[in-house]
Image 1 (spheres, protein in one colour):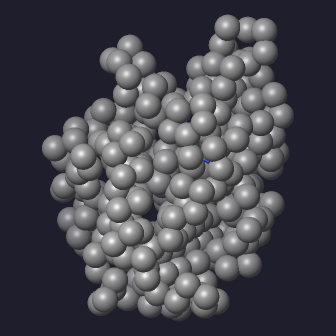
Image 2: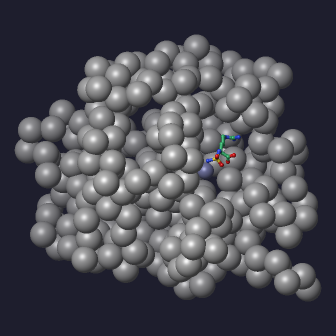
Length: 303
Ligand code: 0X9
Ligand code: ZN
């Protein structure tokens, strides 16, 4: 089964996505974008009213960090709302959406497998000789890879950057999506938890900001205001590196290597750390959706 206001299994998520594509074939396309280390399909969901059009696009991914369950929940709720409201929704007129709702299904399923594994963050790849598993996907991208805020120790449970950039099939799949649609993607949002931060490049350093950071900051504040107007908690807008520096993130890669003009990491939820209660999803996800409408409005206006 699948619950839009729940934490679903990988297979429940697969069923939901395939069901949507079947029922709304004019609107929803599912594209296999790769395979996880353990062989799970990484699906890219495209939602568009003009499949062959040249609309500017928004790319949203979620779940690179296994334990941040609210992130895939949001990506799937976003998918659900876009499809449900497609007739009237301004956020689908002239904008295409690419959503990868679960980037790290191996880690996600591992974090669901027992309370002892609940706080797993990384992928589940096996590192050479050591009896240690996993790479932090958000240190594994090929922009300033291995610089500050990363570990070269495969047994580091939080920030191991991997043996080389894009060593993980999961990050390579996201990179391929960015590059395949790079001419059209104007906004990249990577969903994470927690803290209610909406951060933009650079992530690898807090010493300086990219050129044109003001527009990144302005849009982040617009999105936060939209969420607040809907009754939600504000998002703190800042550069990722001013929060704390960490290199090899997907946001920096999208912005710095691919050239996507707007790139954010969105840290959902303020309280409960990684254990945001399932019963509260119905109150926060619709408020966050208002933030996504604000993102879309800006992309439509500007591109
Ligand atoms: O450390 C991270 O990867 C992100 N925070 S989390 O608690 N979800 O792990 C923040 C990433 C911000 N972006 C970069 N540092 N590039
Ligand atoms: Zn995260």
